[in-house]
Image (cartoon, rainbow, N blue to C red):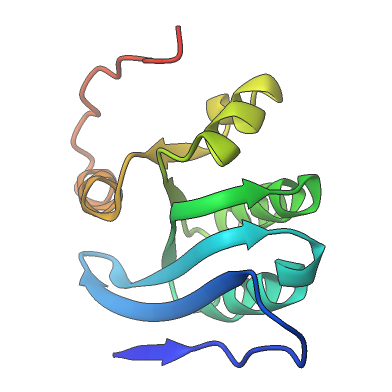
Amino acid sequence: MTSPVPPPPHPLDYTLATSTLDGPRGPIVVVVAGGDLDIVAHDALAAALTDTGTRGDVILDATAVTFCSSAIIGLVHTVHRRLAAAGHRLVLATEAHALRRPLHLLRLDRVLTITGDVAAARARLDRAATDQPEPAAIDSDG
């Protein structure tokens, strides 16, 4: 089931949608974001992540992000902390340089769980739910 987030009353440079997957610990909500995630997108993304975070684990699919502002990075970190406090997980699915580079520079890649795509994010959540050890990660950024 997919439900689009209502657009604000101005031109959009971003897209948002949500869907739900069945997971071993309950629902996994997938928030799909693309385009330029800047202050214009902040409130809509915050609403989508806040609403979904009350239902279980969350995958933020940012594979189509072309720009990410510091406000969005702060939002992702805040949502990660809130979900963890509630016993849920946030997994960021992206290979987008627009997100990976600032997260690396801020060392948030050591705090957040980041995978290359939604399938890998789903697998990470499934392994965590069954307490299976994580495979060794190879950092391609050096």
